[in-house]
Length: 391
Image (cartoon, rainbow, N blue to C red; front, side, top):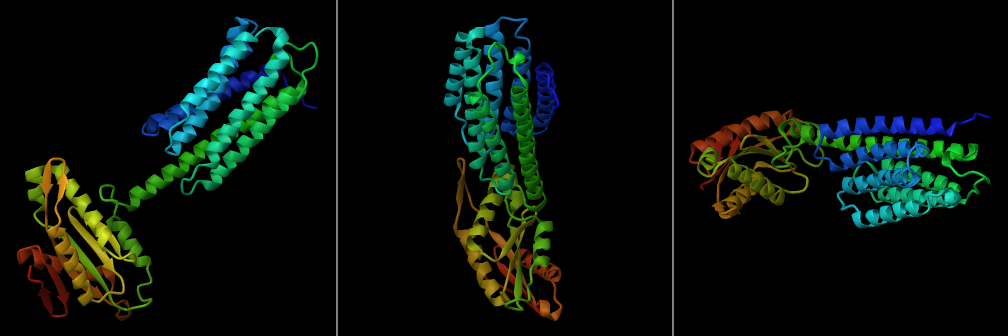
């Protein structure tokens, strides 16, 4: 049987915890907006300091080594509980965690003498089990899209840690033992297994951040940050991916431009200009049908794919949108803002070999005609003719 030296276990525990802490702190410096990552980095840091204090209990006051060391280890688990709560967008249960820590520290200060060692082992097992159950609870209630399997793995790992602590709490301590450094092999293996499970929990946390970071990068690559509409590249990918020749062979593209947008920026400032873009994007989402696709094409230009829609119906939809924008102003701070839009419309039929890129080009030409004709109007690009609405 492999013999484990508890002093070596504590040394490995301290060194590994500090390495994890440094790695997580460096990661936090790369994304300081993630406050939960700072809490996760404090967890192994507290564990390393606590393990070092317990390992030096023969060279420092016993109440300080045991009380302070166990307090730091307790705080490390609480940092993970609080970090998971913040990660999920919830407020950490600070008052409960503070009360738990205070009671735990006072217990170790009052019962630090060697004759209370058996009681301390039992209480540390109970406390560790409760903290691991708290971690499992946070994992179970993590609802972020794409992270359910990872959260389930974290919950199962934390529950295994709770079982390990429960075993330590219920196992009798051999007579004559008054220090954790003198415990036998079963207790040593118990600490090794719990430490291994805690390392797995940190890997689960890192994987959660990998999932969130991947989601952020996917969003930034696909959506316009200001308006939350699709960006130009993703719009063209989505349109190309659709089977446009499904229920109908008639589709339409709208090219939309906010009239005199530079004048809005120059008169009211760029922040107000951004507010106009956001307001129009919200109006666009509200007025379009569920299966239509809208995107910010660039600057103050937007593009919309109207599926299963001929140019006549597209014109009706465009006019409703244009009239609604013209009639609806909005407030931004102390300013009352209003604006108008110009729309170019073009249809295309995939079964005849017509593509959406050609339709975008034709709709852009119709948009130019609308702007040249006085703006605040919709223009349909038809075969051989361009029909403008009277604004």
